[in-house]
Image (cartoon, rainbow, N blue to C red; front, side):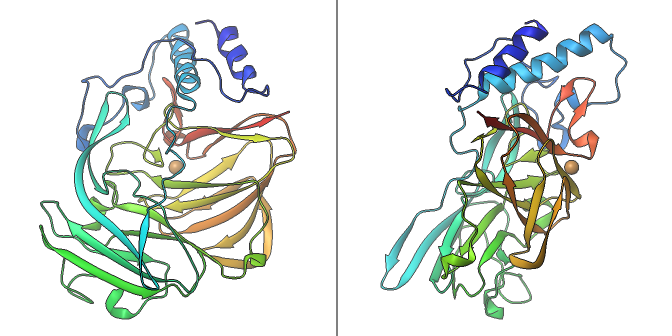
Length: 343
Ligand SMILES: [Cu+2]
């Protein structure tokens, strides 16, 4: 695959058709095929490398080709909402804690701990004022508990074993129930052996829409980035690493909202090329004075909401700017995607 061919394929996405035809190119793989979380390091993020430049170029090209070929093939990449049923006025959600093999990318499989079998867990979405019940069943071989990160809840619903509740032991079910008081971009995650359980996949977005919709910015699309840097053996957005992340595809003039959720151990400065980000909320609280930036530090536990006004056509790289989370001698990996602004 020549460099020009890859570029042409990328340029095709700029057209009205949206998705690009698959480009060829060799598949990156781990050295040993399927690997565990402990040694789950795709080959292209290893070391500083001293490979010949031609080989280095080829690897960089291959990553881009793989990304192009994968566009549109992961329909749930940007989040899958958790369904609920009504019991009177109560929204009833069910979470099942399960250990599964999670493909961070083809051939790179981590032993994940999950809610409902996916990483991140399904998106919980409800409205301020809703009464919600969460029926949590633990099918794992470890105890667990769910913390509702950022939500105002009664103390006994806060999800900290040995402090506010008993652990949910293997085979047990626990019911949480509370009323949603504070709108915003929040999270839910394990609060038991959490360095392992959360970063191996027990993490998700919990979005509370405000009752008064006039408090929300009007946008054409809304994207979720759940960031993780541990437990799955690589750096991920929404449980996947580049080239198996998905692009944001927007039209010139679109206004898009991006919500960042850092569930990992490290800070991730999120850098968007070409177009500034307007940061308007932190941890679900609207900022008194929104600010513009091109790089936004997102620390563990933090959430930020930003608006991107898609005024500049092109293919804009969008990545964590701690560079060894994003690109090495084998090309881009980990916390990388693009914003495509089509004309
Ligand atoms: Cu990073």
